[in-house]
Image (cartoon, rainbow, N blue to C red; front, side, top):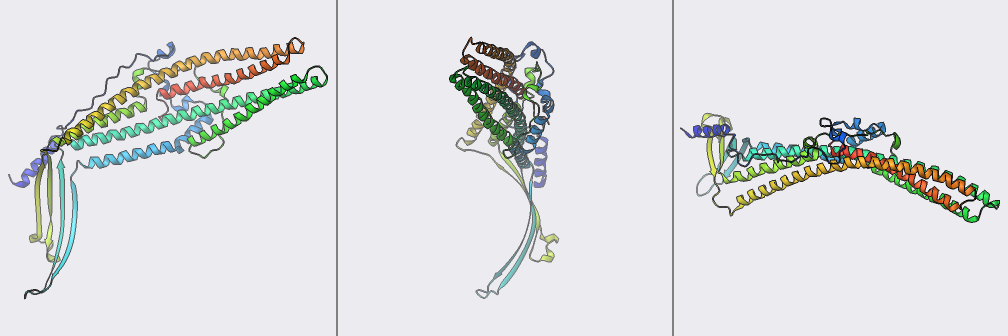
Length: 466
């Protein structure tokens, strides 16, 4: 068999041996998923098919203003754009790595003119050489080095895509969370303004009584304290509201500005029981888990890339073209040339470099495996925390409603006792302060309950599907 035939056989052999790939194939780590989430109620644990995380975000949140804010954030948020750019980068890297499996073909052309001066009786000589040619170099992927590298790059691309979905999921939850915080501050501001109006009326009445000698100046000063305290609370709330609007504006990709409101906090619908679904489905649902799993796939493939260096590199080369001293004769038969060759390079001694590179790849794979397991456990914890938080926040809100009702009735009784001369104005002052505090705490309890719904949605992997 001539040289051309042997080279052709080697190329055919490289095509027919795709299964010869160095390094271990990826095996998904075994995860012991609990049968149900800790902290789930009986209704939540009994929902084995549906999951709140399966709902689209526009179904999970029923406030039209909030939906519009989320849409704006998904279109304009810079973190989403950064994640999308990283996907483009990973896709380009995959194209570069995948190209290593194919032969490189280059074309060349040159024209060289040379003139040798007259010397030692030899006349002056001028030459002109024209050459065109095509050359090819192909490193055969006998040991799967380039296929493993492509596998790793493809996994990195998938990891970037899941990372982008994780950014989207977090963004949806962050916008909802901060919007509900804003509506809670609006509610606190409304409560404080009502309290300020009531306290100003009480101050005017106390001042009238003091002018008529029916009460003392001390009662007037105590009534003034209530007014000044409510006014200070309002100023602080107005500051916090503007700062919260600025924070939401940045999430939307805008400069600081006013945020359009929708439903009040107390009118926000949310389910009494949130279906959690099966814990095993969380592994296929949460984008951060899928992201770190693809990192593990990429790291595992790099072991094969490193181990392939133990074996010889086999390179096919070919070149052909034409060369002539006269341009008119460039494409004539005598002007043609060609060459075909095969070369191999086998490492003999490298001071342990290959072994160390394999060790690095194996260690990184082990690190990625433990990162995957840690991410899964953290996901189970976040779901459990959110479920128990929602249930307990409902209980806190219910008790706080009772406390607020009792504090309101205490004001009525304290006012009657004061007007009947049975107690001092200090008792009214204390009751007013306790009632306002109870109202504000109830508003925060309402917020915590709704925030728990958002946390459940985020922890179940909801929000990334658009």
